[in-house]
Amino acid sequence: MRVIIIGGGLAGLTAAYDLTRSGYETMVLEKDSVPGGMLASYNINGYSIEKYYHHLFESDGELRALIDELGLGDRLAWLRATTGYYTRGKVFSLDTPIQILKFPDLTFRDTLRLARFVMQSKRIEDPMPFDEVTARKWILESANHSIFDNFFVPLLKSKFGENMDRVSAAWLLSRINLRSNRGARGEKLGYICGGFENLINAVQRVVTDRGGVIRCNARVDRVTIEGGEVIGVEIEGSFIPSDAVISTIPPAMVLPKHGGVSKTSQHGSGTSIRYQGSVCLLIGLEERLMKDTYWLNIKPDAHFGAVIEHTNLLPPKNYGGDHLVYLTTYIHDASASLMTAREEEVAELYINTLGKLFPAFNKDRVLWWKLARDMCTAPIYETGYRKKILPYKAPIKNLYLAGIFSHPNYPERSMNGSIKAGLACARELVREVDERRTL
Ligand SMILES: Cc1cc2nc3c(=O)[nH]c(=O)nc-3n(C[C@H](O)[C@H](O)[C@H](O)COP(=O)(O)OP(=O)(O)OC[C@H]3O[C@@H](n4cnc5c(N)ncnc54)[C@H](O)[C@@H]3O)c2cc1C
Image (cartoon, rainbow, N blue to C red; front, side, top):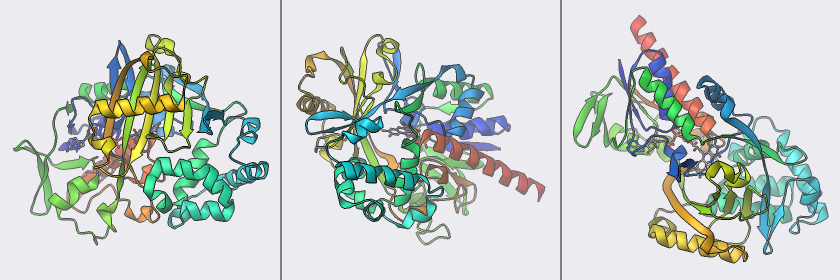
């Protein structure tokens, strides 16, 4: 039985990891030159650093189990992560109750109200019933206008742009749950020392040791369907036969054109999940940018919504002394100039903007920069999203779907969610094949 997996990100690699363990002939086809997808890394000055900032949470059970299974447990560090808010020309740390009370954009009463709102939100164990309620409505009803305008609007805007008013309260509640588990000195986040590339490499090694194939620079152009069932895929005009295909790329790229899946199929609106993109500039600096803040949300309209100083999580000594800073924004329109402009133009714009926000920042201290851009980096978690989630088994025989659009990635996509989806999808395929064999 041969299974082809489209996409060598975490979902595809972990599906291959599981299938090769069950003895399936498995081939992963990845369009890029290396596997990893959104978790791919740059190799710079002898170290490895993710193209997009990554960390894990204590609650990421499947990811932690995989890290242990691959023998990487001793590289996993739990590090204190500090957060802040940039407003009124300054960085305000928001890690301790005192710092939060001092935050100038909220009155004392609003701060207490915000604390109550967070506690109330955290008590909600199942956010799913809030899938049809907008985050805006939930905040306005449970907190107030001032908290919404002064605290949440900049966060929602930087994450969802013009779609912010459509985002569901289910997303917000799960986000609050994830990010508010902080002790008196802030939150602890997990990171694999040496980079998440170690995780990708380790999964890749196990898959190939078990006889699986991971082919890079292999963009799948077409899923071939004959007589209502998938019989293989096409790459640059050549056909590769297979008994089943697992696709981990956005379903709209696989389903409507090739599979003829109607929008009114039994799987609900199916391919109507909308995505947003990311533009993320990583800069290497000779000196630190911020005193000790890891994650900084930017309140004023800038070209990026967050500044993430990675080396305030894992110190610069791990990177030959370089200080690493991500400047990042979400994008909602493929024709936006940040997506279409030349890389040099985006880098210049971002670096100049950083200079305006931080007058002490000296752009001559920028050692290097790298830009990552992609239009499908996260679903837009609008109200009603739950009904759009596709099951692992597509409505075409022998076709399976797993990725950031799958159930474990709602209400927030994550490495853990894609690992869970990849493993669950592979197990569903194995179960169905076993069932067919026994018929
Ligand atoms: C800016 C950013 C920050 C993030 N931060 C975190 C974080 O801190 N913590 C966390 O847990 N998660 C984080 N994530 C999310 C996490 O990276 C993803 O959820 C996870 O890596 C997705 O894995 P995937 O396999 O589902 O999708 P992808 O990684 O997108 O994999 C899909 C793969 O398919 C390939 N592909 C596409 N089309 C084709 C084709 N036609 N043929 C062949 N191959 C194709 C792509 O190149 C890609 O490699 C972040 C993501 C981004 C963008």
